[in-house]
Image 1 (spheres, rainbow, N blue to C red):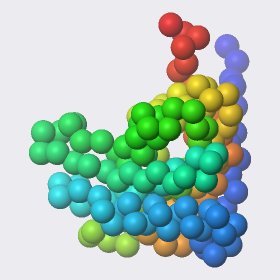
Image 2: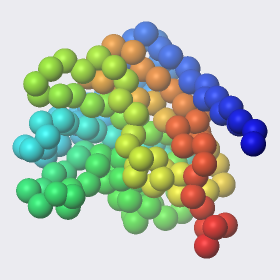
Image 3: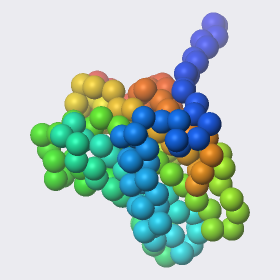
Length: 160
């Protein structure tokens, strides 16, 4: 037996204003999406904004349903919309923001496992990493240069 150590590296920004202007704007689009979330059950609102290589921004928010797990997360809502409507566009970056109704959310909130796998699929499909920026409702912002930092053993078509 041997042990394998896997490390991830992220950039951490103290505040939104420390990011490049285009990423600040992308995160503000994620705020708008977050505020439009339909989350009457969890009361946890998530917004995602995707920047395509053309500069187009696509937004998505979590959409819940009384028949769990029929809802869909913000990241997948946005990435599937982009994939369906901009088939020839590569995704440059994703900004994600989350806010709980019952308490202040100051910790950066990373995508869930299902969303990580969906983002991984698009990185593989386009043959290019996607920068992922994530935060709570305010405060620190984390940046991952690639989904592989968040999900080092991605499942790809190579296994099929």
